[in-house]
Image (cartoon, rainbow, N blue to C red; front, side, top):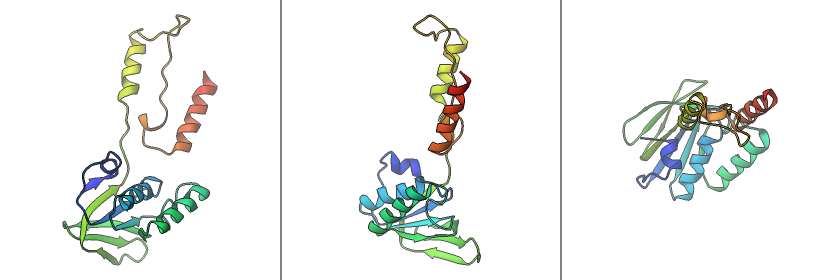
Length: 169
């Protein structure tokens, strides 16, 4: 079993059928499914929403769904993970609660959220607190975090946070 970051970072995966379980319904699940397909895997994308990319903008979602169709990625909408035994992924239909079983699976990838990536923010904040960060004019530098260094979020949310910080400065 792998997570989306393993695929994005280029982890060596076994050949064969891959199932991507996409809990968030954002760009990560479909993107990972496309990466796996391009690497030669037969891919099934199990999406928790009505459609893959349900939570992203319509024009991006439509282009993504078209790319999935061109890549021959099988899409199972309205499914959530229930279990995995090493060769079969057990899903449950969200509305009917019926079992959905995908067999002969070599790779299971979970696209189910992330954790904040705050190492750089922490380092910069510590430097600013110690007085070690100053501007070219010699003034102390303020450090503000936006986006995934605070919590996993969409690009749009991070841009809005950046706008709010810029407006406040």
